[in-house]
Image (cartoon, rainbow, N blue to C red; front, side, top):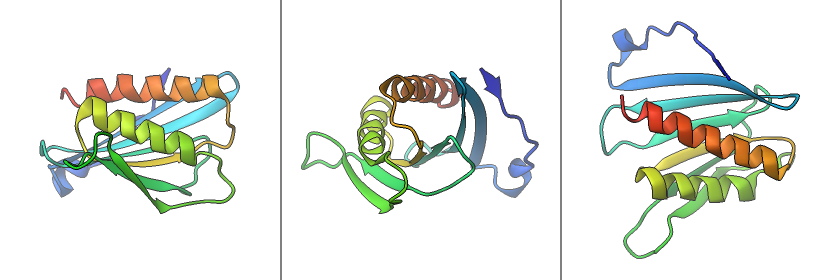
Length: 133
């Protein structure tokens, strides 16, 4: 597990947002993670996960009073990425666990269940750490 540390002078620009970056490997695939975390308790989080430097999907998931499960909507879809189902269920689980509206960009080119589990565990571990700060 490797942390990607790029010096961002974001605190001087906007002290209400924090960007966390992380790189990990699953077998021979490099996976990139980036989290935009707003310091307000009611603010949403933005998560980008990809195995290439692309931004090709985006969904939003949130809890509403009329539904038991969080609702999810695709804001940006790509026909070349098979991650829409994974993205939906993952963003719903993030909302349930962390009780925060979630924007998720999940662009993984391979549909391997073990990799999906690895990505989810990594996201949950990192969010548990980042949201405590």
